[in-house]
Every structure is written in C-alpha cells, then in structure tokens.
Length: 463
Image 1 (cartoon, rainbow, N blue to C red):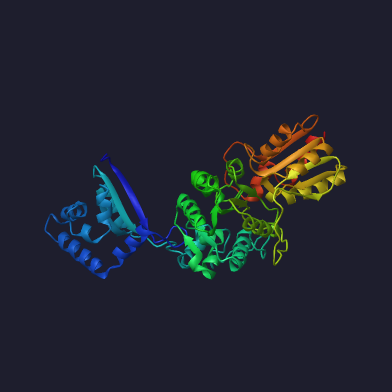
Image 2 (cartoon, one colour):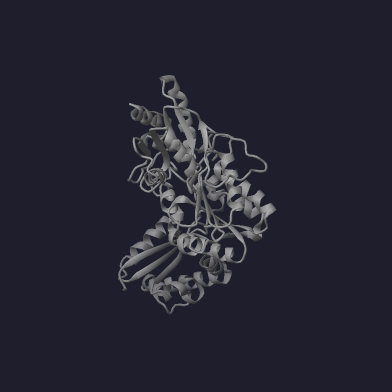
C-alpha cells in the first residue's frame, strides 16, 4: 500500500538459541563478506565527501533501489518487497541510530532498518551465554551465577524429559526430536548432542514442526515434538488435521503446562488440556512427579498414534526415576491417599498439594481421599464411576483453565453416566481470565490451587 512505516530488523544472529533457517543464513553470508564491507564503506565515505551535497547524496544512495549496495547486501531481498532498505548499521552506536531515525522518519513509504547488535551486549556473562540469560532467574550481578533456590540440586521436569528421551532413542532408532528454536528450553539439547542426525530445529515455526513431524511419521519415523504449552497453541490446526485426523504416530511433549511464573500472561500454559482433550485419536497425560513423567514417556512410545504428555515448569518433588520405567495402562489412575469423607480428584502438578492438604485436614477431623487420574484423555472412567458411587462430595483440582479442562471432563463423565444424583462436585483451577505476572507460588496461592487453597475448598465442600 506504500504507507509510511518503519520496520527494524534486529540482527543479532539469535532468537533464543542460535538462529536456523535460510533468511538467517542469507544475512550472515552477505554481511560477513570482507569485499562487501570494504566496498560499502568506501562508497559511502566517498559520497559523504561530495561538497555540500554529501549527506543528502549518501541518504539518496541508501534509498535508491539502483544503488550498488542493493546488489551486495540483503537490500536486494527487502527492496523486492517494496521496502526502502537502510543498513546495516551498528545498533549499539546510539548517536548513529538517532541520526538514522531522524532521517528516515521523513520518508513517506515503508522503510526497513537493518540493525546489527550483539545479544547481551554490555554485560559479559550475558554476552558469553546469551541463551541462558534470555530467560534468567535470580543471579548474582557481579558474577552472573544463578542464586540457589528451594529445590536446588533436583533435576527439572525439562531435564528428566531430555535424559529419558535420549534413553528411549538409544533403543529405538526411529525416534527423532523436533523443536522450534528452543533446544535448551525444551531439554532437547541433550538429544542434539547425542543424536545430531535425528534432531531438527525448525526455527520459530511451531506449525511447520508439527506438519514436519506428521510427514516423518508417514515414513515410519517416531517424532517427538517438544514445544512449550503456550506455543503449541500456534499449531492447533496442524495437530488436528495433519496428525490426529490421520492418526499418525507423533508424540507431543508439552513443557510449561500450567502457570510458569515470571514470564507472565503470554507464557502460562493454561489451555492445553482444554484444546487437546476434545481431539479424536489423541491420548493426553499429565504426571504427578518426575518418575511418572518417565513412565508416561515410555507409555507414549509403547502406543501407536498421537500422544501428548504435559508437564510443569521447574523441579518436581525428588521422586526416584527408574532406570527402565514401565508403561502405564492407558486410562488408569491411582489412589494416592485413602479417606472416607470426601474425594479429591486431581491430575499433574496438583496431586502432591492435594495429598498434603488431605493429610493436614486429618487433624481437623476431615478424612479426604486423593485420586491421581493421570489421564485427561481417556479418563480413568471405570475407577471414577466406582468412586462416584462411594463419595457424595467430590473436589476436582487442576492447573489448567476450568473452561473445557480436566474438571469439565470429569463432570461430563458423571452427568452422562447419571452419577450426579445427590453428589456435590466442586472445581478449582485457572479461572476465565489471563493470569498476571508473578512467581508460581504466588499465583497458585492467588488462584486457590495450592495446598491451602485446596484445604479451603474442602472445608467449604464438607460444610
């Protein structure tokens, strides 16, 4: 449309991890050529030296689609898209940046400013390890070293996933790992190191990651797609049409399921149970701890067809992971705490808080049982229906949006099986709103899905 617009390409060779893809390679190749750098510098210096007209002429050269620079730089590409190309310029030279923007804001057409920067610039630990400092937690500014926190020393769910996937891939050469620009964030960097020929980073393109996995599955491979819950939303259509509709053997490992803490509303994995559980052919699980995650991964590869395992950010409870984890029978849960007054049905990260709550409620004379469903789809129907016969008060706890989530699935089962007569069911989870920034502990407390929130919900239910 030729409208006045300025686009800034921040070219630091990285997004979170090292960039992949054709555009990145194109920029890197073009900008690294010594001949280009020398020629560009000589042409611009000569033009600026022209009496009176130097600066204006230099600007004209930048703007001109016929200038020599467009034949040697990425300007060729952007000029083809009808952008006036300016650059590359040093993004850390504030004076030069101000000068450039003062000039280009007068141009009444789309302009692309190509800026070269260094990720982490100005802080040596971040310059040396930009991937780590992309989403850093607490650290000592003087050294850049992370501060110790509660749970230090325990492996994270992400690390358990990565190490277990490597063990499974050692036994099954058809297993491949796919991620979307997040090898370190998803724990697939371990797989990349051990099996580089079976690892693919597709860049920031979750839709392509899923479709690519579907293509691999049609050729007999067993792709493991590792993506954060919030980013898997981008590929919803591909999950439905490219994988589940064709019942292909693709395994989804969904990191950051639930509240992620300081990354804020954009990164909470609040919706995956809701947007996955209604898709035919898909099996959906959530582990209560690290050991159960390893067992669910074994289960996933023991099955043929699409399977998804969602697990939270951070460390677990310190459960010992078996060297050879056994599969779990599909659609079966487990009773983790006995009780006769009220039943708590939970899944994933909320199972242990529910168990702790039930143990503390015993001191108040409330005897609460806790059932770990393990499967969101298919639900452990037989067990849940038998439990519904024995309890007239049921609390369902989840770390997912209550709209269409795990609690909705349990309610649907009870209604369709006509087991709600005389039974009171209460649900707690993430309400119908975007959750703000805060630590996981703060947010779970605020939403009433931590141990104390579960205790309060049980007190209300029994009273």
